Image (cartoon, rainbow, N blue to C red):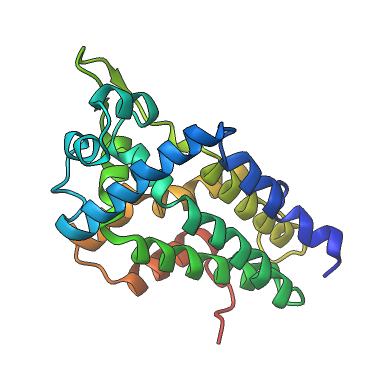
Length: 229
């Protein structure tokens, strides 16, 4: 596979995605943010994500609750920031994967990406729960009771995944591996099937295994794709 074609699978590029995901912060603001994340990580590890409130995080970090909410509107947003470093490593892992299997069909490369995506969801475990909750309902963010919705679908992470999947699907259509399809829609559909709320529902409420979910996504979105050995 030509280098320029491989780059088209990740239009933002690895370094550009990481750069777009970082906020431009003063040094003191970055240190302040890191202290919050360190405290949250410790509390989550000790008590579990669901058992820790934003009030407890603010108290342990030695900051006002209003200050915490100005930086993170709700626990789901804080968890997304905690997962940021893992997401950045995932971007690099995908770049390495696609480089290693560049000669494979577009559908096989898509399948390998789906395997990685499901494994990442499984790895993140309970960290997904507050993220999922913010996608399903408005999060109460301040004392005034004003509701704000977490725009997961506009996040750099979601946009990068969508462009990655759309690139692979487009190539599969161009190579005749798939019949003509609405690529942006199918890419959104895959991400919907692998969204935190739906994944947790399938795992916890339905009791489906990680492999069953993966097979379902394969069947609905790219049935007939080669399976990696």
